[in-house]
Length: 203
Image 1 (cartoon, helix red, strand yellow):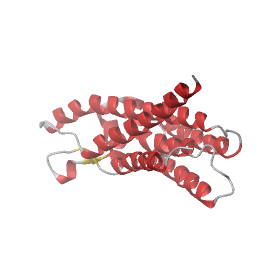
Image 2: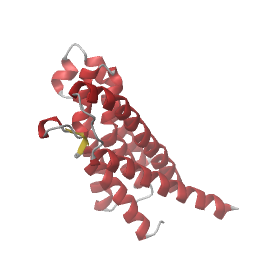
Image 3: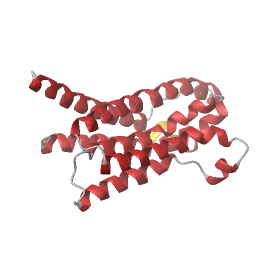
């Protein structure tokens, strides 16, 4: 078991990712041109980045997966366990495409997002019934946190110059972007510190 303090730090990391996704990532010159995290994917399709824009939908998926891996080893008989896992699954649906997009001519562009939600459901089943070793949970959190740290950031840095050119003004970096970065980095550091500590304990 990890200490109560580390549990709190993990929860703060999860919270930072969630709040960051709902905050401004790309602050424009006016209120109508400020894009929140969950708006970045839809808006960036006009910039010609192709299916890479789906990387902007990673935060709710990575957050859901990190939350699920965090529950590895929890007792299934506790209602808190199922509540936490249920919240994780609900969060992942923030990345699910609209029905009209799934039925439209470009439906193939949305396959990765549907697959991501499907992966969350599979992991939810796995951590509930098959995966019981906390070490696997920390490995899962570390890998997922690394993905959530890098991929949305990479596409953000690719999109930002195009957006600045279109609006003819140098755009800043919103607090939502930094919170996403901070939250994933915190989970990554905490998970790796747990894993390395266990390795040293073995020796």
